[in-house]
Image 1 (cartoon, one colour):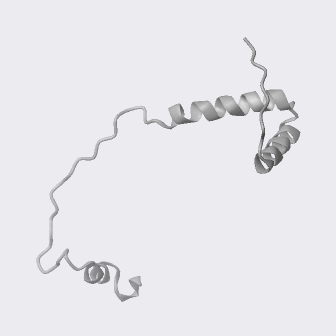
Image 2: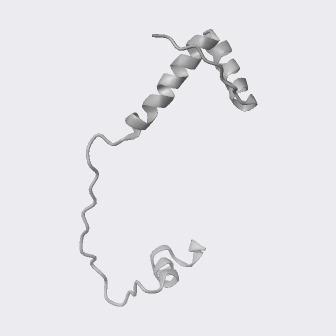
Length: 83
């Protein structure tokens, strides 16, 4: 089944689309269909294949180091030039 429709394409998109057609030597219809398919598949392709899980571990804090003062902590880890 084919659908015929009219679209109003904004200038920046039109420029990029025309450039894409020139580079790929594809017609407007073919390019629009290809790019729409890619755009519609993108959200599915971006989903992780498996569930991502973070496992917390206990923090081994060294004696004499306070995690309450971030600036002091960075200075001890990276030296005074961290700023």
